[in-house]
Image (tube, rainbow, N blue to C red; front, side, top):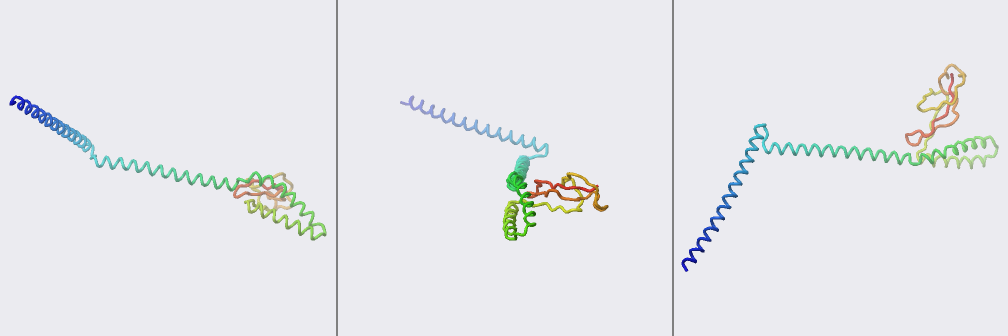
Length: 198
């Protein structure tokens, strides 16, 4: 019986001894890790950087990355909204370009009708003409006002021919407007065709 108790006591002692050794091993590992961290911090401090300074630097780098990314995104949004707005303004450019010859014919017809004596016909056609023009204007179509005597500008005028200037002051200037030009928003969709004096 005493031998059994003796063995039991030894087993408990061994178990306690193992637990203590495990605890001591863990404590040693913690101290070693702590010393290693302190050594790293001391190494860093040799270069003038503590652990908090390193973290601050890292946070600053991430903040800079975020700000750059945010700025790029804002530029992207601004650019795409500008492109979308431009697309909406000029989406009907093809249709408007196709309507311009019809508008020209309408203007010529109206000029011929003005020569007749039938005032009711003239008034009816003028009403339709004005409504047609206003509808196109509401969609962004604007006529380019080019006057005789203006200085010729190759960026906004299309010269179809040159004739001898009727007077000295018309040399290099617009003598006649053959076909009216039009803008859709800020974009010229048809350049005015002009005759210049030489």
